[in-house]
Length: 114
Length: 116
Image (tube, rainbow over all chains, first blue to last red; front, side, top):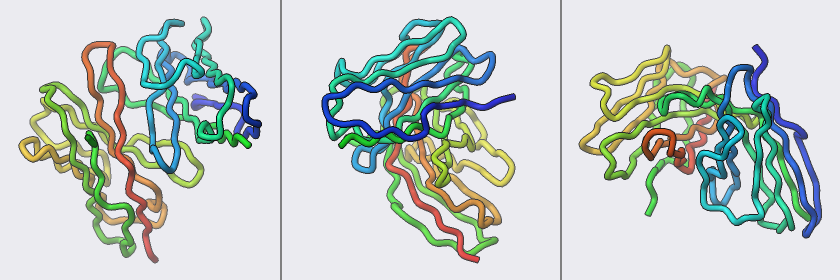
C-alpha cells in the first residue's frame, strides 16, 4: 500500500506570492489533516478535511485554505505569502472514523519564503 | 499555557540502554488520547504508540511502552534496548475534543541521539 505522498518536496517563493501544496492520502483514507512545523512554534494544526468537507480548523489566518477532492486528495493554499510562512508543511491521513486512530504522515513540503 | 510539555530538548543515550522520554499534559477534559511520534531527519512522522485516557493498562508496542500516570498527567515513552536507528526527534501529542471535532496538540519534541 502506498503511503501518504506530498508534492512538491521543496518550494521557494517570494513574499506576496501564493502557493499550492498537494497531498495524496493512503488509499481508503477519507481524512486528511495539515500541520505547519517551524523551529519556533513547533507543530501546529491547520485544518482537517473529511469527505470533501472541512471538519476541523486550527487558529490560522484566512490566507491559509484547503480543499479535498472526491478521491480524498487534498490541496492546501497559502495566499500573500509572508516570511513567517517558511515552514515544513506536513499532511496526514487516516480513516477518520475514530479519535484514537493513528495518523499516517507524508514527508512534508519544505516551503521557503524569501 | 503549554498543554503538552516535553522537558528534555535533547538526550544522548548509549546503544542498547533503555530510554525514557518525558511528557506531561494539561487538560480538564476526562476524555483524551495521547500519542507518541518519531520524526527522523527525513521529516516524516512515524506513529509509535497510543494511550487513551480510559485505558486501564499502559500501552505497549514492541520495544515501545508508555508509562501512563493519570493523576500526575504524565505519559512518558520508554524505549527498551535502544538502537542506532532510534536517533530522531520524538513528539508527544494530545487529542483534545469530542466526536469528530478534535485536533492534535503537540509538544516541542525531544531530540534523541543514540551513541554506538
